Image (cartoon, rainbow, N blue to C red):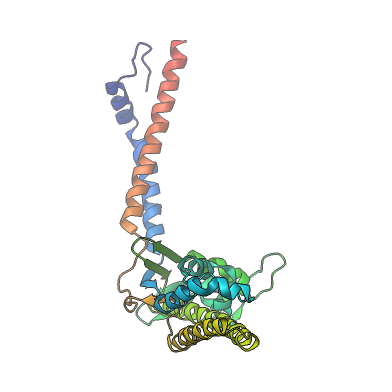
Amino acid sequence: MQVDKSAEITLGFLIRTLWNNKFKIIIPTAIVSILAVFYALNKPNVYTATGVYTPASQGDASALSKLAGQFGGLASLAGVNLGGGSKDDTQVAIKFLNSRAFLQHFIEKYSLADELMAVESWDRANNKLIYNSSLYDEESKKWVRTPPANKSITPTPWEAYESLKDILKIQYEDKEGIITINLTYYSPHLAKEWLELLVKELNALWKIKKLNKSDKLLKGLTQKAEETNISELQEVFYNLIAEQTKTNLLTQVNEESVFESVGSVVLPEDKSAPSRALICILAFILSATVSSLVIIGRTINKVNLSQQ
């Protein structure tokens, strides 16, 4: 295209420039769009299982906290710390659920490193996981990867932690008291199963923690009740022991010690990603825009050089 030195950079000038260079825009845009189609078609589907929970009831703990508030001063004078009463454990539990300690424990307990790090897709027709053969030999059930520096061929829960954390999303709506947990994976069956196991394991560990704390407090209260000769203090201790024993018994029979399920986790039937149409549309728009800007930039540069 010959550049007119007197040409002004107007809308008409830009349109003519784009039209005269249309093939320089169409060809790269078509190439990028075709590559995007291949990429989208080869990207595996993933499915998201969703669980909705509420913080476990603090009703029985609140009864103890009222007594602690009423008699805590006397108990502390006797050398017994009754703690913080009905403290909301939700935020702490969410932090623990996301922690490396818990997720590594979960991966190790259920032997999930292979599924987290070696699987690349899922065969829906046969309900079968497809493993990356360059990483894992499915027939021999052995890893064949080239390990990173200072790592063994078989990955440890430490390595698999990031893979699990990336597919786990937790949202806590403080005002409504709703915890939403999403787990995304190639297989919808495993996404549902792992989510249920995660919450079950969290509740089980939290239950042990609460029982250990409760047992320690009961032992301390019982010891102080036996040691004191003051009838008023004995009455305080026995009241606290009764409430703590009730809380302890209810904790033992309650399987949902920190997160209570609002409803069962539903098996996802439709994929949550990828959005293949969106990938192709964005690739087309981006490639066409970049090609057009490059053509316009070069043309304006030529105009400026010719006018100097």
